Amino acid sequence: MRSPDGSLVSDYEYEIPDELIARYPAPRRDGSRLFVLPRTGSAPSRHLGFADIVELFHPGDVLVVNESKVLPARLVGHKPTGARAEVFLMRPAPDSDDPLVWEALVRPGGKLKPGREVIIGEDLSVEILGGAPGGGRTVRLVTDLTVDEALDRHGHMPLPPYMGREEEPLDRERYQTVYARPAGSVAAPTAGLHFTPELLDSLTERGVMRAEVILHVGIGTFRPVETNDPAEHEMHHERYAVTSEAASIVNDAKRAGGRVWAVGTTAVRTLESAVNEAGEVVAGSGTTNLFLRPPAGPRVVDGLLTNFHLPRSTLLMLVSAFAGYDRTMSAYHEAIAEGYRFYSYGDAMALLP
Image (cartoon, rainbow, N blue to C red; front, top):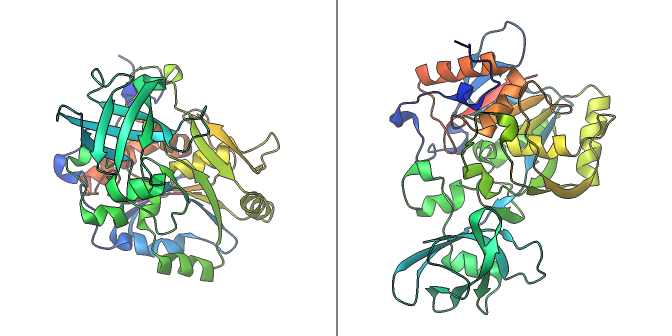
């Protein structure tokens, strides 16, 4: 019988008690716990509070954050017959210049065919136009409102299914980072949820620079890996952008001996998608379906701040690309034994360079 080594998706299975699944955030953003794991060497793990994270940084380090803002992308309404229906907006349709045309998931999928309508409110309905990749639909928002106005008025925050609850008022604030700017994600870049303005100021005072990038998190973050060979898994493309300023901050810090810390797997995937053959980050925008997993490791990112991820997920495999499979899974078992809270609203992990 083979020993798990991280080469198969089934190697990333683990069991977690239901009470450790965080369905609500900690009372304070920086009130979560922080599991500190050196990426290499024999130093043991440490257990801190997230507010203590400043001590892990050196002057000259760079903190890279994903500024993407979560869309209240879940629209709940009814068909003209009165039967309940849902539309989950994923992204603006790439082959349309109309800002009201989107790719979406719909429910009930089998009955919402082209030409059908979902009534969301008096000032908003959704017309089904046709099919879209991944079993989705191309839809048009029928409204005199802008997209932002329509979603602010009628949309619900797309909480992950494992939370097992409907959106509550607190989620509008807490399922969003304090530095979120351009809307476009259908899931939060959750490692950033722990930061407060005061904590970011403390890092600046310590001499830590900050670089802002954008990766709009897509619906693929909710999809399980259904193959056992990771190489057979097809990642969804997600839109990203790296400014010339962000690229310069990262490259200059690396040349000066500073360490690059990514806040979350989305910041990792953005930087690692933008790195050239010389190991430098290149400014630009596009889409990425980068799947970082063992035995490959990061080329530009040195340290990672992240949450605890679902079993069998591409995110857990990305963490293993930083710390190695055995070290990562051992840390997860230790975190469970220590009662850490898992997933989007859960506690954090720092992978030390």
